Amino acid sequence: MSTNESPVKETYRAPAFADFEPELSAPGATPERLAYLKEHGFVIINDFADNPWIPILREAGRRVTEACAPENSYDTIDCSKGYVHRAAHDEPWAIRGLIHPAFGESSFAEFHGSSDFLDFVASWCHGLQPEDMTFSGMLLWANPRKQENGPSWHRDVTWWGDGASYFSQREIRGDTPEDYSEEVERIRWKEIQESNEKRVTERNGVSMFLALTDDECHEVIPSSHHRWRTPFEHDVLLPQGMKDQGVPYTPSWNKSDPLPGQVAIRLKPGEALIRNGNNIHTGHTVPERERNTLSIGWSKWSGESTGEPSTADARNAWQLDPAIRDALPARVYADSMGPVGRNPETRRHA
Image (cartoon, rainbow, N blue to C red; front, side, top):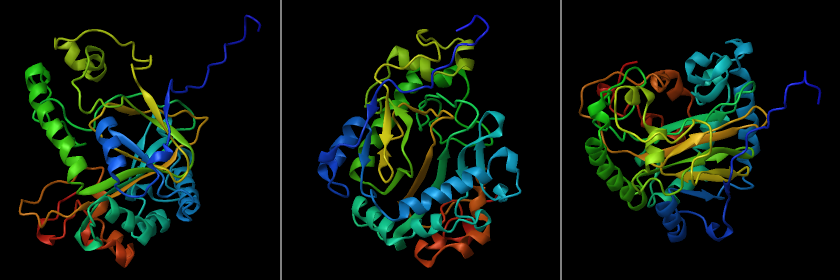
């Protein structure tokens, strides 16, 4: 190589992988699968391997991702009818609104309400039937084509402050050094442990990452959902703003090296990840490897809301469009759309 040539950058690859384990092949919520999920915070299932829906959804996912690329603007589909998470260069990495008729891909709603998927939900959730379900979200994971995206290690739970859920329009969970004190964190941690047990035993819903093509982009620290974080992990999770404001921590991570124990979940088409989002995890994509994975699920309806109407999270406000209800197959039960609610008097506002 001449002195004028730039070194070729190696494509990122995870240091270790977790693959589907054949001994967990029995379908549904078997004791073996549940024990694995409880211990590790994730389990890979193969219930949709060789399912005829997979190639249909794969091509639909590719069309949607291409349509949401910045060079296509809003010319192919009006993706303002959904919510597109964008990385550098405005490239999509997660796409919401797949079931909106503006996207022109009816297969997503059809699969969501298909006997194949609803029967799986029943097998996982104590026989839960469609009339008792509520919409729990759907999105497509994609990989930006121009630049590596990640890592961004986090938990899907508020482990600081008052423990409130994330709200995209503003920070409502607490943003002072006191909110990140170990005393407050210990209180939140006790609540997290209680929720861990309920996730496995009650199973009032199920959500999965269903691979439509090979996927190794979701990385986790196994079992980090049920043990106290290490000083290294605290450095990884603690926001820089809190460090700057004096929250005690042990400098440990250079923001690029692998974390101790991290593994990438390696899925083949038709395999799916069921996980506990309380564990420490990240997405990490590269332009050279396609990501085309469907996040999809149903939850048990908890009854009509009695609270005051409230503002919807911007990520979910697209679900308020009446056009969605009109487009859904009957078996999807349009009245179960979560952010809207079954009672029109308690609909939330965008």
